[in-house]
Length: 465
Image (cartoon, rainbow, N blue to C red):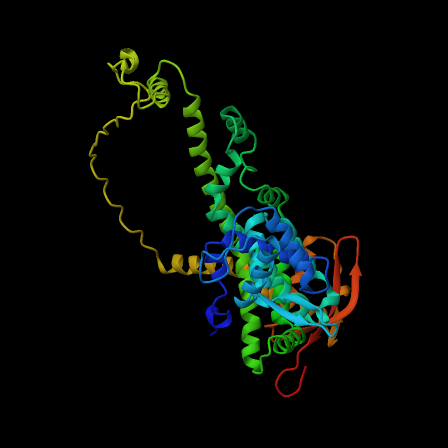
């Protein structure tokens, strides 16, 4: 297993822990931004020097690149040249010489990844959860992409699912900071109004849109069905394994198959746990919102009750400086309580009473006939819950003297008929009497729309149908 520091150069993090880390970080972001209009992460050195010179012209601080901190660079262009060379020595930049003796400055692969992460941390942009779920659903529904299911579908679905879950977990652990940021520098009355009006939306507008649009409920079942189709369809599974071996450079077919199954199971588990993650966010949201609202109410409290008087004392004391020696004598004139008010925290004792224990009812004894009758009732009730045998009988009746028939021949008049069609397809994998074959024909009726399939009678031992 690779280690991070076995991949990165030894001095890679040196610019970000030095005394000039602010300048180096700004320069890296400026260099990265200058590549936006280019076709690669390589730009003429003079252009990079001009960009960094402009940056250092806007700053008055000095910077030293030598071992002797007293040897400072004061000229902006010298600072730019020194910064480029220093970042190159630390593994962030590389040089490329053209045939016309022009030198290009390139960002290394590792540098691009780290600078992109730095940008994401600085911008702190919120993920649009609704868009990610819609994107996953759309990719799985696109039949044209199944020509290469791993490259075009599963790899993207796994990456989007990981981003979705990671973003929600990040919101869950940062929810307190998020609420503080939403209410910072606002008037107290505005804070209370904000809590009252946007109780669900204050933490995350994207999460709020996700919850009210019911995207998880609408798309989750369809996503799971398509993932199950990948596992149960031999052709798709073989294409997935071949794609994984090609892209991930895996030579062992069995290991590739295990990896594919693991990816699909992880995606399904992630969508199963989304409701738990959102419920945890809501719980923390309510907890911290109540605390923030209580603080705001305390700041606004006034009057002659005990809470208002204590608040007045604290406000009065906060205005005094260390030079003030005398305080108002009436300041601590808080009336003592002569009675237990409704706001008292005193716990009222509970009286315990012990009643006579009721007699234990004797166990009911059943006759042999009653036991057989109950057993028969339980067996009948259990049989009603199992559709498999009913479906087998239905299919056998439809076969008659034929060896196969199309699903479109089954008349769909109501929801129960359509459910029968679904169960026929579902039980086909484990059935000993029939199997199904997909067709390319799409059936549309007034009641339903589905891809037609052929139901074929299986052969038993001896070659008989």
